[in-house]
Image 1: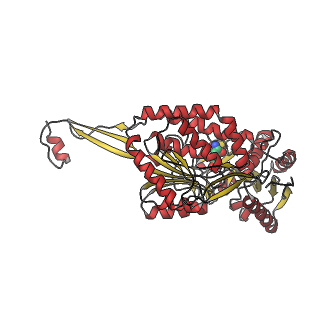
Image 2: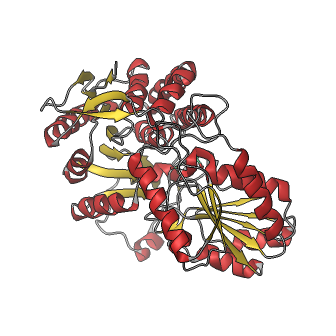
Image 3: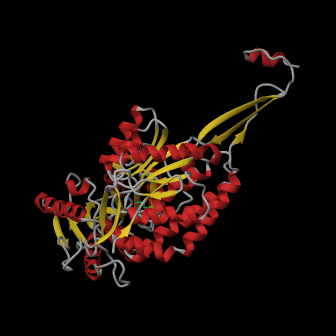
Length: 496
Ligand code: UN1
Protein backbone atom coordinates (compact mmCIF):
# COMPACT_ATOMS: atom_id res chain seq x y z
CA UNK A 1 0.00 0.00 0.00
CA UNK A 2 1.45 3.40 -0.93
CA UNK A 3 1.90 5.99 1.81
CA UNK A 4 -0.71 8.74 1.84
CA UNK A 5 1.15 12.04 2.17
CA UNK A 6 -0.68 15.18 3.29
CA UNK A 7 0.02 18.88 3.33
CA UNK A 8 0.71 20.45 6.72
CA UNK A 9 -0.94 23.86 7.05
CA UNK A 10 -1.54 25.74 10.28
CA UNK A 11 -0.69 22.64 12.32
CA UNK A 12 -3.18 20.40 10.49
CA UNK A 13 -2.52 17.60 8.01
CA UNK A 14 -4.81 17.87 5.00
CA UNK A 15 -5.33 17.02 1.34
CA UNK A 16 -5.14 19.65 -1.41
CA UNK A 17 -8.33 21.73 -1.66
CA UNK A 18 -8.93 20.28 -5.13
CA UNK A 19 -8.51 16.75 -3.78
CA UNK A 20 -5.98 16.07 -6.57
CA UNK A 21 -2.97 13.86 -5.92
CA UNK A 22 0.15 12.60 -7.70
CA UNK A 23 2.18 9.41 -7.22
CA UNK A 24 5.90 9.02 -6.48
CA UNK A 25 7.81 5.90 -7.43
CA UNK A 26 10.62 3.90 -5.91
CA UNK A 27 13.31 4.31 -8.60
CA UNK A 28 14.81 0.89 -7.84
CA UNK A 29 11.56 -1.05 -8.27
CA UNK A 30 9.30 1.37 -10.20
CA UNK A 31 6.56 0.65 -7.64
CA UNK A 32 4.38 3.46 -6.32
CA UNK A 33 5.79 4.55 -2.97
CA UNK A 34 3.41 7.35 -2.01
CA UNK A 35 0.55 9.51 -3.18
CA UNK A 36 0.71 13.22 -2.30
CA UNK A 37 -1.46 16.34 -2.67
CA UNK A 38 -1.15 18.30 -5.92
CA UNK A 39 -1.22 21.73 -4.32
CA UNK A 40 -2.39 24.76 -6.24
CA UNK A 41 -2.50 28.51 -5.60
CA UNK A 42 -5.36 28.04 -3.10
CA UNK A 43 -3.32 25.69 -0.94
CA UNK A 44 -0.28 27.95 -1.12
CA UNK A 45 -2.43 30.94 -0.13
CA UNK A 46 -3.80 29.02 2.87
CA UNK A 47 -0.26 28.07 3.90
CA UNK A 48 0.99 31.67 3.57
CA UNK A 49 -1.96 32.90 5.67
CA UNK A 50 -1.14 30.33 8.37
CA UNK A 51 2.52 31.40 8.30
CA UNK A 52 1.57 35.09 8.54
CA UNK A 53 -0.66 34.44 11.55
CA UNK A 54 2.00 32.35 13.30
CA UNK A 55 4.69 34.95 12.65
CA UNK A 56 3.07 37.36 15.15
CA UNK A 57 3.93 35.01 18.03
CA UNK A 58 6.98 33.19 16.70
CA UNK A 59 8.98 36.35 16.11
CA UNK A 60 8.43 37.28 19.78
CA UNK A 61 9.32 33.84 21.11
CA UNK A 62 12.76 34.34 22.66
CA UNK A 63 15.47 32.93 20.40
CA UNK A 64 16.92 30.67 23.16
CA UNK A 65 13.45 29.09 23.44
CA UNK A 66 13.31 28.67 19.66
CA UNK A 67 16.74 27.06 19.96
CA UNK A 68 15.43 24.51 22.49
CA UNK A 69 12.87 23.37 19.93
CA UNK A 70 15.67 22.96 17.37
CA UNK A 71 17.65 20.85 19.88
CA UNK A 72 14.56 18.69 20.27
CA UNK A 73 14.40 18.42 16.46
CA UNK A 74 18.02 17.20 16.48
CA UNK A 75 17.17 14.62 19.14
CA UNK A 76 14.11 13.24 17.31
CA UNK A 77 16.01 13.16 14.01
CA UNK A 78 18.71 11.12 15.75
CA UNK A 79 16.09 8.66 17.06
CA UNK A 80 14.46 8.38 13.63
CA UNK A 81 17.65 8.45 11.57
CA UNK A 82 17.41 4.87 10.30
CA UNK A 83 13.70 5.07 9.55
CA UNK A 84 14.10 8.36 7.65
CA UNK A 85 17.14 7.03 5.78
CA UNK A 86 15.25 3.93 4.62
CA UNK A 87 12.27 5.97 3.47
CA UNK A 88 14.59 8.34 1.59
CA UNK A 89 16.42 5.47 -0.15
CA UNK A 90 13.09 4.05 -1.27
CA UNK A 91 11.84 7.39 -2.49
CA UNK A 92 14.86 8.77 -4.38
CA UNK A 93 17.26 5.84 -4.69
CA UNK A 94 20.60 6.78 -3.10
CA UNK A 95 22.22 4.10 -0.96
CA UNK A 96 21.60 3.81 2.78
CA UNK A 97 25.07 5.04 3.78
CA UNK A 98 24.28 8.24 1.87
CA UNK A 99 20.73 8.70 3.12
CA UNK A 100 22.01 8.28 6.68
CA UNK A 101 24.54 11.02 5.91
CA UNK A 102 21.74 13.19 4.57
CA UNK A 103 19.80 12.92 7.85
CA UNK A 104 23.03 13.51 9.79
CA UNK A 105 23.54 16.86 8.02
CA UNK A 106 20.15 17.95 9.32
CA UNK A 107 21.05 16.79 12.84
CA UNK A 108 24.30 18.77 12.68
CA UNK A 109 22.46 21.82 11.37
CA UNK A 110 19.78 21.57 14.08
CA UNK A 111 22.42 21.61 16.83
CA UNK A 112 24.36 24.40 15.13
CA UNK A 113 21.33 26.62 14.58
CA UNK A 114 19.87 25.70 17.97
CA UNK A 115 23.07 27.18 19.44
CA UNK A 116 22.49 30.33 17.41
CA UNK A 117 19.44 30.86 19.61
CA UNK A 118 21.89 32.15 22.24
CA UNK A 119 24.01 34.10 19.76
CA UNK A 120 22.43 35.57 16.63
CA UNK A 121 25.27 38.02 16.95
CA UNK A 122 25.05 41.60 15.89
CA UNK A 123 27.54 44.30 16.84
CA UNK A 124 27.96 47.67 18.44
CA UNK A 125 30.21 50.41 17.14
CA UNK A 126 31.14 53.89 18.37
CA UNK A 127 28.77 56.71 17.41
CA UNK A 128 29.32 60.39 16.74
CA UNK A 129 27.81 61.84 19.95
CA UNK A 130 28.87 61.34 23.58
CA UNK A 131 25.36 60.48 24.87
CA UNK A 132 24.31 58.09 22.21
CA UNK A 133 24.60 54.36 21.62
CA UNK A 134 24.51 52.41 18.36
CA UNK A 135 24.06 48.77 17.47
CA UNK A 136 23.23 46.57 14.54
CA UNK A 137 21.11 43.48 15.02
CA UNK A 138 19.67 40.73 12.89
CA UNK A 139 15.90 40.86 12.62
CA UNK A 140 13.45 38.34 11.19
CA UNK A 141 11.94 38.99 7.76
CA UNK A 142 8.49 37.37 7.93
CA UNK A 143 7.21 34.56 5.74
CA UNK A 144 9.89 32.62 3.86
CA UNK A 145 9.19 30.42 0.83
CA UNK A 146 11.38 27.36 0.28
CA UNK A 147 11.68 25.35 -2.93
CA UNK A 148 13.97 22.34 -2.56
CA UNK A 149 15.31 19.40 -4.62
CA UNK A 150 14.98 15.63 -4.34
CA UNK A 151 18.69 14.74 -4.19
CA UNK A 152 19.15 15.86 -0.56
CA UNK A 153 15.53 15.78 0.60
CA UNK A 154 16.30 16.35 4.29
CA UNK A 155 19.75 17.98 4.35
CA UNK A 156 19.05 20.79 1.87
CA UNK A 157 15.69 21.80 3.43
CA UNK A 158 17.41 21.72 6.83
CA UNK A 159 19.93 24.34 5.64
CA UNK A 160 16.99 26.62 4.98
CA UNK A 161 14.35 25.70 7.58
CA UNK A 162 16.64 25.76 10.62
CA UNK A 163 18.29 29.18 10.13
CA UNK A 164 14.95 30.65 9.03
CA UNK A 165 13.28 29.38 12.21
CA UNK A 166 15.99 30.41 14.66
CA UNK A 167 15.86 33.94 13.25
CA UNK A 168 12.12 34.11 14.01
CA UNK A 169 10.61 33.63 10.55
CA UNK A 170 7.75 31.38 9.56
CA UNK A 171 7.88 29.13 6.52
CA UNK A 172 6.04 27.66 3.57
CA UNK A 173 8.02 24.67 2.32
CA UNK A 174 7.47 23.29 -1.21
CA UNK A 175 9.69 20.22 -1.71
CA UNK A 176 10.41 18.43 -4.98
CA UNK A 177 7.56 16.36 -6.41
CA UNK A 178 9.96 13.38 -6.36
CA UNK A 179 10.24 13.31 -2.55
CA UNK A 180 6.95 14.30 -0.86
CA UNK A 181 6.95 11.37 1.60
CA UNK A 182 10.43 12.08 2.97
CA UNK A 183 9.58 15.78 3.20
CA UNK A 184 6.39 15.08 5.16
CA UNK A 185 8.28 12.74 7.53
CA UNK A 186 10.81 15.55 8.08
CA UNK A 187 8.08 18.10 8.82
CA UNK A 188 6.49 15.65 11.27
CA UNK A 189 9.71 15.83 13.30
CA UNK A 190 9.14 19.57 13.84
CA UNK A 191 5.53 18.96 14.84
CA UNK A 192 6.63 16.33 17.36
CA UNK A 193 9.36 18.63 18.68
CA UNK A 194 6.64 21.11 19.68
CA UNK A 195 6.95 23.73 16.96
CA UNK A 196 3.76 25.84 17.22
CA UNK A 197 1.12 25.46 14.46
CA UNK A 198 1.64 27.60 11.36
CA UNK A 199 5.37 28.20 11.93
CA UNK A 200 6.37 25.56 9.37
CA UNK A 201 3.89 24.68 6.62
CA UNK A 202 4.25 22.03 3.92
CA UNK A 203 2.65 22.12 0.47
CA UNK A 204 3.54 19.30 -1.91
CA UNK A 205 3.19 19.46 -5.67
CA UNK A 206 5.06 20.55 -8.76
CA UNK A 207 5.72 23.77 -10.67
CA UNK A 208 2.31 25.37 -10.08
CA UNK A 209 2.77 25.35 -6.30
CA UNK A 210 6.32 26.68 -6.59
CA UNK A 211 5.22 29.48 -8.91
CA UNK A 212 2.36 30.41 -6.56
CA UNK A 213 4.89 30.74 -3.76
CA UNK A 214 7.34 32.80 -5.81
CA UNK A 215 4.49 35.10 -6.88
CA UNK A 216 2.83 35.53 -3.49
CA UNK A 217 3.21 39.17 -2.39
CA UNK A 218 3.45 38.26 1.31
CA UNK A 219 6.40 35.92 0.87
CA UNK A 220 9.40 38.23 1.17
CA UNK A 221 12.20 35.73 0.67
CA UNK A 222 12.50 32.74 -1.64
CA UNK A 223 15.29 30.27 -1.04
CA UNK A 224 15.69 27.87 -3.94
CA UNK A 225 17.91 24.86 -4.63
CA UNK A 226 17.43 22.91 -7.84
CA UNK A 227 17.92 23.04 -11.59
CA UNK A 228 19.21 26.13 -13.37
CA UNK A 229 16.12 26.31 -15.61
CA UNK A 230 13.64 26.37 -12.76
CA UNK A 231 15.85 28.54 -10.57
CA UNK A 232 16.09 31.29 -13.15
CA UNK A 233 12.32 31.25 -13.66
CA UNK A 234 11.71 31.52 -9.92
CA UNK A 235 14.32 34.30 -9.75
CA UNK A 236 12.66 36.45 -12.38
CA UNK A 237 9.17 35.94 -10.94
CA UNK A 238 10.29 36.79 -7.43
CA UNK A 239 12.56 39.65 -8.51
CA UNK A 240 9.71 41.37 -10.35
CA UNK A 241 8.01 41.61 -6.94
CA UNK A 242 11.17 42.92 -5.27
CA UNK A 243 11.84 39.81 -3.17
CA UNK A 244 15.14 38.63 -1.81
CA UNK A 245 16.07 35.37 -3.56
CA UNK A 246 18.76 32.87 -2.70
CA UNK A 247 19.63 30.48 -5.53
CA UNK A 248 21.65 27.28 -5.54
CA UNK A 249 21.66 25.70 -9.00
CA UNK A 250 23.91 23.71 -11.31
CA UNK A 251 27.49 22.53 -11.11
CA UNK A 252 30.19 21.07 -13.34
CA UNK A 253 32.78 20.39 -10.68
CA UNK A 254 36.30 19.24 -11.40
CA UNK A 255 39.05 17.34 -9.66
CA UNK A 256 42.52 18.34 -10.82
CA UNK A 257 45.19 15.65 -10.50
CA UNK A 258 48.80 16.78 -10.88
CA UNK A 259 51.66 14.46 -11.76
CA UNK A 260 52.93 14.37 -8.17
CA UNK A 261 49.56 13.36 -6.64
CA UNK A 262 49.08 10.41 -4.33
CA UNK A 263 47.45 8.08 -6.87
CA UNK A 264 45.47 5.89 -4.46
CA UNK A 265 43.98 8.87 -2.66
CA UNK A 266 43.02 10.50 -5.94
CA UNK A 267 41.40 7.35 -7.34
CA UNK A 268 39.28 6.87 -4.24
CA UNK A 269 38.15 10.50 -4.15
CA UNK A 270 37.34 10.60 -7.86
CA UNK A 271 35.30 7.39 -7.75
CA UNK A 272 33.14 8.51 -4.82
CA UNK A 273 32.75 12.10 -5.94
CA UNK A 274 31.80 11.10 -9.48
CA UNK A 275 29.69 8.00 -8.86
CA UNK A 276 28.51 8.42 -5.26
CA UNK A 277 24.82 9.39 -5.13
CA UNK A 278 24.87 8.15 -8.73
CA UNK A 279 26.46 11.47 -9.70
CA UNK A 280 23.32 13.32 -8.61
CA UNK A 281 24.85 15.95 -6.32
CA UNK A 282 25.40 19.56 -7.21
CA UNK A 283 28.86 18.96 -5.75
CA UNK A 284 29.52 15.78 -7.78
CA UNK A 285 32.70 15.58 -9.83
CA UNK A 286 31.90 15.46 -13.52
CA UNK A 287 35.23 16.65 -14.93
CA UNK A 288 38.62 15.13 -14.27
CA UNK A 289 41.41 17.53 -15.22
CA UNK A 290 44.52 15.39 -15.32
CA UNK A 291 48.16 16.24 -15.98
CA UNK A 292 49.74 14.25 -18.83
CA UNK A 293 52.37 12.39 -16.77
CA UNK A 294 49.98 10.68 -14.37
CA UNK A 295 47.14 10.26 -16.84
CA UNK A 296 47.79 6.68 -18.11
CA UNK A 297 48.15 5.22 -14.61
CA UNK A 298 45.22 7.18 -13.20
CA UNK A 299 42.85 6.27 -16.04
CA UNK A 300 43.75 2.57 -15.79
CA UNK A 301 43.11 2.59 -12.06
CA UNK A 302 39.77 4.41 -12.49
CA UNK A 303 38.58 1.97 -15.14
CA UNK A 304 39.52 -0.99 -12.94
CA UNK A 305 37.84 0.48 -9.87
CA UNK A 306 34.69 1.51 -11.77
CA UNK A 307 34.18 -2.08 -12.87
CA UNK A 308 34.10 -3.26 -9.26
CA UNK A 309 31.24 -0.94 -8.27
CA UNK A 310 28.00 -2.75 -7.58
CA UNK A 311 24.96 -1.07 -9.06
CA UNK A 312 21.64 -1.95 -7.42
CA UNK A 313 18.90 -1.18 -4.93
CA UNK A 314 20.17 1.27 -2.32
CA UNK A 315 18.55 -0.75 0.47
CA UNK A 316 21.03 -3.57 -0.16
CA UNK A 317 24.13 -2.99 1.97
CA UNK A 318 26.37 -4.33 -0.80
CA UNK A 319 25.23 -1.71 -3.31
CA UNK A 320 27.67 1.11 -4.14
CA UNK A 321 25.62 2.95 -6.75
CA UNK A 322 21.83 3.24 -6.62
CA UNK A 323 19.44 4.08 -9.47
CA UNK A 324 18.88 7.47 -11.07
CA UNK A 325 15.92 9.24 -9.48
CA UNK A 326 13.48 8.65 -12.36
CA UNK A 327 13.18 7.76 -16.05
CA UNK A 328 13.77 11.40 -17.04
CA UNK A 329 17.07 11.46 -15.13
CA UNK A 330 18.19 8.23 -16.78
CA UNK A 331 17.15 9.44 -20.25
CA UNK A 332 19.21 12.59 -19.77
CA UNK A 333 22.30 10.51 -18.94
CA UNK A 334 21.71 8.35 -22.02
CA UNK A 335 21.35 11.43 -24.19
CA UNK A 336 24.67 12.87 -22.97
CA UNK A 337 26.52 9.59 -23.42
CA UNK A 338 25.38 9.60 -27.05
CA UNK A 339 26.48 13.22 -27.40
CA UNK A 340 29.88 12.34 -25.92
CA UNK A 341 30.39 9.53 -28.40
CA UNK A 342 29.33 11.72 -31.33
CA UNK A 343 31.68 14.46 -30.18
CA UNK A 344 34.54 11.97 -30.44
CA UNK A 345 35.30 11.35 -26.76
CA UNK A 346 36.58 7.88 -25.94
CA UNK A 347 34.18 5.75 -23.87
CA UNK A 348 36.32 3.62 -21.55
CA UNK A 349 33.80 2.03 -19.22
CA UNK A 350 30.01 2.05 -18.66
CA UNK A 351 27.97 3.87 -21.26
CA UNK A 352 24.91 1.68 -20.82
CA UNK A 353 21.99 0.83 -18.57
CA UNK A 354 22.53 -1.81 -15.93
CA UNK A 355 19.70 -4.22 -16.53
CA UNK A 356 18.07 -5.29 -13.27
CA UNK A 357 14.65 -6.04 -14.81
CA UNK A 358 13.20 -2.93 -13.20
CA UNK A 359 14.55 0.43 -12.05
CA UNK A 360 16.48 3.34 -13.53
CA UNK A 361 19.98 1.93 -13.26
CA UNK A 362 22.97 3.13 -15.25
CA UNK A 363 26.57 1.95 -15.13
CA UNK A 364 29.32 4.30 -13.89
CA UNK A 365 30.71 5.82 -17.06
CA UNK A 366 34.11 7.26 -17.92
CA UNK A 367 35.09 9.19 -21.05
CA UNK A 368 38.67 10.16 -21.84
CA UNK A 369 40.12 12.30 -24.62
CA UNK A 370 37.50 14.90 -23.81
CA UNK A 371 38.26 18.38 -25.08
CA UNK A 372 37.33 21.58 -23.25
CA UNK A 373 34.77 22.58 -25.85
CA UNK A 374 32.75 19.36 -25.85
CA UNK A 375 29.25 19.51 -24.38
CA UNK A 376 30.07 16.67 -21.95
CA UNK A 377 32.83 18.92 -20.57
CA UNK A 378 30.55 21.92 -20.17
CA UNK A 379 26.96 20.94 -19.43
CA UNK A 380 25.55 19.47 -16.24
CA UNK A 381 24.53 15.82 -16.72
CA UNK A 382 23.55 14.98 -13.12
CA UNK A 383 24.41 11.32 -13.43
CA UNK A 384 27.34 8.89 -13.13
CA UNK A 385 29.35 10.24 -16.06
CA UNK A 386 32.92 11.51 -15.73
CA UNK A 387 34.82 13.30 -18.51
CA UNK A 388 38.62 13.30 -18.40
CA UNK A 389 40.42 16.29 -19.90
CA UNK A 390 44.22 16.19 -20.26
CA UNK A 391 46.32 19.26 -19.41
CA UNK A 392 50.03 20.04 -19.44
CA UNK A 393 50.39 22.18 -16.31
CA UNK A 394 48.82 23.58 -13.15
CA UNK A 395 48.13 26.85 -14.96
CA UNK A 396 46.24 25.10 -17.70
CA UNK A 397 44.34 23.01 -15.15
CA UNK A 398 43.20 26.14 -13.31
CA UNK A 399 42.17 27.76 -16.57
CA UNK A 400 40.08 24.74 -17.57
CA UNK A 401 38.48 24.61 -14.13
CA UNK A 402 37.61 28.29 -14.14
CA UNK A 403 36.16 28.47 -17.64
CA UNK A 404 33.06 26.54 -16.55
CA UNK A 405 29.72 28.35 -16.61
CA UNK A 406 29.30 27.05 -13.04
CA UNK A 407 31.42 27.52 -9.93
CA UNK A 408 30.38 25.39 -6.98
CA UNK A 409 33.19 23.06 -5.96
CA UNK A 410 36.67 22.14 -7.15
CA UNK A 411 39.53 20.02 -5.93
CA UNK A 412 43.22 19.45 -6.51
CA UNK A 413 45.38 16.45 -5.75
CA UNK A 414 49.05 17.32 -5.30
CA UNK A 415 51.76 16.69 -2.71
CA UNK A 416 53.32 20.07 -3.47
CA UNK A 417 52.34 22.69 -0.92
CA UNK A 418 53.15 25.55 -3.28
CA UNK A 419 50.88 24.16 -5.99
CA UNK A 420 48.13 23.62 -3.41
CA UNK A 421 48.26 27.22 -2.21
CA UNK A 422 48.36 28.55 -5.76
CA UNK A 423 45.23 26.54 -6.45
CA UNK A 424 43.52 27.93 -3.32
CA UNK A 425 44.32 31.41 -4.57
CA UNK A 426 43.35 30.89 -8.20
CA UNK A 427 40.41 28.46 -8.34
CA UNK A 428 37.26 30.54 -8.65
CA UNK A 429 34.67 28.22 -7.10
CA UNK A 430 32.73 28.76 -3.87
CA UNK A 431 34.27 25.63 -2.34
CA UNK A 432 37.86 24.41 -2.85
CA UNK A 433 39.22 21.07 -1.64
CA UNK A 434 42.84 20.00 -1.35
CA UNK A 435 43.48 16.24 -1.56
CA UNK A 436 39.78 15.52 -1.04
CA UNK A 437 36.85 14.91 -3.43
CA UNK A 438 34.45 17.68 -4.43
CA UNK A 439 31.66 16.48 -2.11
CA UNK A 440 31.27 16.42 1.65
CA UNK A 441 30.77 20.05 2.64
CA UNK A 442 30.16 20.60 6.37
CA UNK A 443 27.33 22.72 7.72
CA UNK A 444 29.45 25.23 9.67
CA UNK A 445 30.99 26.76 6.52
CA UNK A 446 29.31 28.75 3.76
CA UNK A 447 27.96 26.55 0.95
CA UNK A 448 27.36 27.93 -2.51
CA UNK A 449 28.94 28.75 -5.80
CA UNK A 450 30.13 31.46 -8.14
CA UNK A 451 29.00 32.24 -11.71
CA UNK A 452 25.95 30.26 -12.96
CA UNK A 453 25.72 28.16 -9.81
CA UNK A 454 23.91 30.85 -7.89
CA UNK A 455 23.32 34.53 -7.32
CA UNK A 456 26.01 35.26 -4.76
CA UNK A 457 24.13 34.04 -1.70
CA UNK A 458 25.45 31.27 0.54
CA UNK A 459 23.79 28.70 2.74
CA UNK A 460 25.01 27.20 6.03
CA UNK A 461 27.54 28.66 8.46
CA UNK A 462 27.10 32.25 9.59
CA UNK A 463 26.64 33.37 5.97
CA UNK A 464 23.54 31.19 5.84
CA UNK A 465 21.78 33.63 8.17
CA UNK A 466 21.95 36.42 5.59
CA UNK A 467 19.08 35.06 3.46
CA UNK A 468 16.74 34.88 6.41
CA UNK A 469 17.47 38.09 8.30
CA UNK A 470 17.33 41.81 7.77
CA UNK A 471 19.88 44.05 9.47
CA UNK A 472 18.33 46.60 11.79
CA UNK A 473 20.55 49.48 12.91
CA UNK A 474 19.48 51.03 16.19
CA UNK A 475 20.52 54.44 17.61
CA UNK A 476 19.70 55.24 21.24
CA UNK A 477 19.97 58.86 22.33
CA UNK A 478 20.32 59.03 26.12
CA UNK A 479 21.27 62.71 26.41
CA UNK A 480 17.79 63.64 27.74
CA UNK A 481 18.08 66.99 25.97
CA UNK A 482 16.48 68.53 22.92
CA UNK A 483 18.62 67.46 20.00
CA UNK A 484 19.13 69.12 16.69
CA UNK A 485 17.12 67.36 13.98
CA UNK A 486 20.18 67.06 11.81
CA UNK A 487 23.52 66.13 13.24
CA UNK A 488 26.53 67.09 11.21
CA UNK A 489 30.23 66.86 11.88
CA UNK A 490 30.47 70.45 13.05
CA UNK A 491 27.81 69.90 15.75
CA UNK A 492 29.71 66.89 17.05
CA UNK A 493 32.77 69.05 17.53
CA UNK A 494 30.69 71.58 19.51
CA UNK A 495 29.19 68.98 21.84
CA UNK A 496 30.34 69.40 25.50
C1 UN1 B 1 23.75 19.13 -3.02
O1 UN1 B 1 24.14 18.31 -3.84
O2 UN1 B 1 22.78 19.87 -3.30
O3 UN1 B 1 28.88 18.61 0.00
C2 UN1 B 1 24.26 19.29 -1.66
C3 UN1 B 1 28.07 17.72 -0.27
C4 UN1 B 1 26.85 17.57 0.61
C5 UN1 B 1 25.75 18.48 0.14
C6 UN1 B 1 25.44 18.42 -1.32
N1 UN1 B 1 27.21 17.88 1.96
O4 UN1 B 1 28.21 16.98 -1.21
